[in-house]
Structure formats: C-alpha cells, structure tokens
Image (cartoon, rainbow, N blue to C red; front, side, top):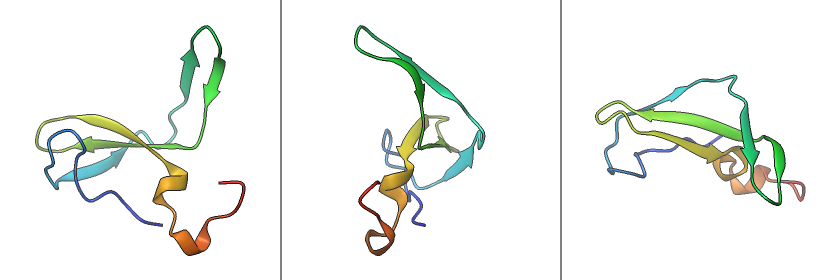
Amino acid sequence: MLQPVKCPVCGRGAIEPVLQKISVRGDSEDFHGQIGGLKTYRCKVEGHVFFVRVADLEDEDSRTIAS
C-alpha cells in the first residue's frame, strides 16, 4: 500500500497516520450516513489533519473494479 509523502495543505513532508479506527459521518440534503474507506493523517509541522481514500493509496496493480 502506498502512503502519502507530504501534507496537501502546506506541502511539508513530515506526516503521520492518526486515528486508525475513526468513523466519519456525512449529512447533507442528499446523503446521511457513514463514510468508509478513509485513512486519517496529520502534518507533524503545522498540525493539519487530512483524509485520504484507501482506494487512492493502493498500488494500481492491486486495485479491483470495486475500488
């Protein structure tokens, strides 16, 4: 599995995975429910928190049609 190499907010390269068992819920006019398939990372320099889809972290050779 690939890992992000830098923070998408500030561009710095010091990031770490956090909140491995997080549950994200989305609520809008068209959608109400759990959002799965996300990994959470934190920028160690500026403290930015960001989510990345697990499907985007997979190597292209290992992706399936369901991803």
